[in-house]
Length: 191
Image 1 (cartoon, rainbow, N blue to C red):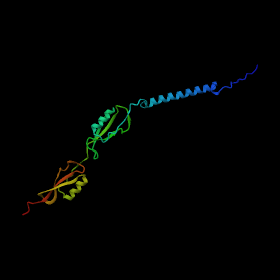
Image 2 (cartoon, one colour):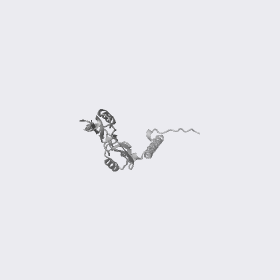
Image 3 (tube, rainbow, N blue to C red):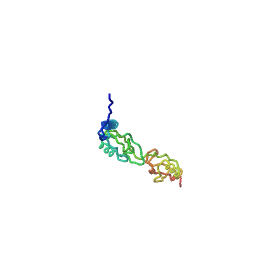
């Protein structure tokens, strides 16, 4: 028996059966990768395929009604979580939102808002019976200032605070004026 030699034809490289098999296998690997990547993107982040999400706008420093309207127009559900005093923002202004502005969210997501109740109120301290310089220091340290100083007859000593307007304990915005009524001294004892 005679041994046969296996000889390939000397044709171009791309026409050989081995090369065609290699190209077919690479095509299958590439197709599997592309399909698998597409499925994983859709499965993990469907919003990136079907973009119906919206970026949350900034509603801070807006009046509550305008902030609610803006969020409702984009399909979000605003909810007031509470109210807090704020010296920087007037009453009824949004001072906090969660999630923060710029967050990409699905429609119908609840957005929590906190609204300002206005400036912090300071209770007027009780300075009755003190002289004007002492009363002024106490009022200033409490966050209010001395306003008009009226004098009236009464009391034994001159320059003693007889009353405040508004009365002690009443809340006033920080920095507002408190009027003092001061004694001129006991005029009944003078001849």
